[in-house]
Image (tube, rainbow, N blue to C red; front, side, top):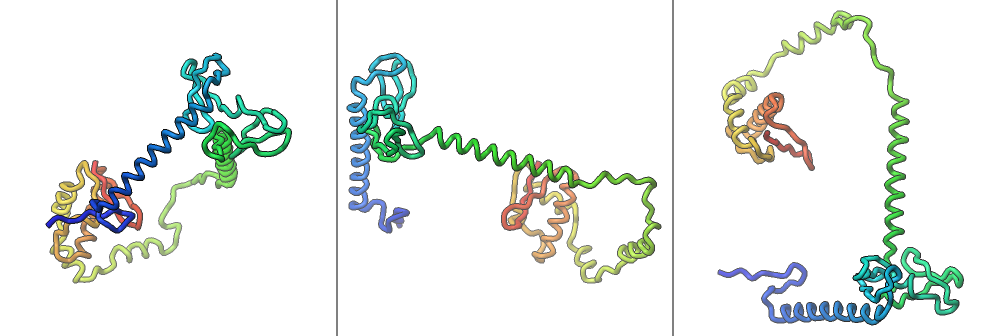
Length: 256
């Protein structure tokens, strides 16, 4: 059976004749727009001389940017050739439009297709200013935290466990605590470090694998997960893999 492929935005098969005809119309409209834009640029720059070399070789790349084919200089035709229709003053480029500084009013460019213009220099300066401000704040934070650090701790004499009354007895009690028989029997019966070691190394050596995706070796999924994790810690201490925590708290093993 042949499955019909569906367009991701329109719920109809991609082979639908109506949809194919619509895409053909879209393609032709885009081609027509490109040609119309190129013709517009060619007309408005006809016989315009490059301000650098004086040759009529200016070619529009996009709105607000023309490049001379002779000397490769870049110019904004609106700023070079156009003046205010009321006072004939030179125009300046604001954030998104051209402006007459004398009449104090916006002026529509006769060299651009779009009404709004993208002031690349303005946005470059703003981005640089934002980066500089962020850098200054980080430096101020570093300086502030540097002064709040505690002085280095210098031990005049070695630490002794006897300095804390009862600590030794508490530690001994923890070490000697009774392990439940069922847990001890389960571990003794199933956990073979070498088997789990070879199992993990066969998967992660030179690779990156999801911890949850590793195949179980015993039926008890919870116990198997504990054994895998313990083995992974041993392998990380040996420098054979790295345990990484990723999004959602999941673990990933990266072999070396």
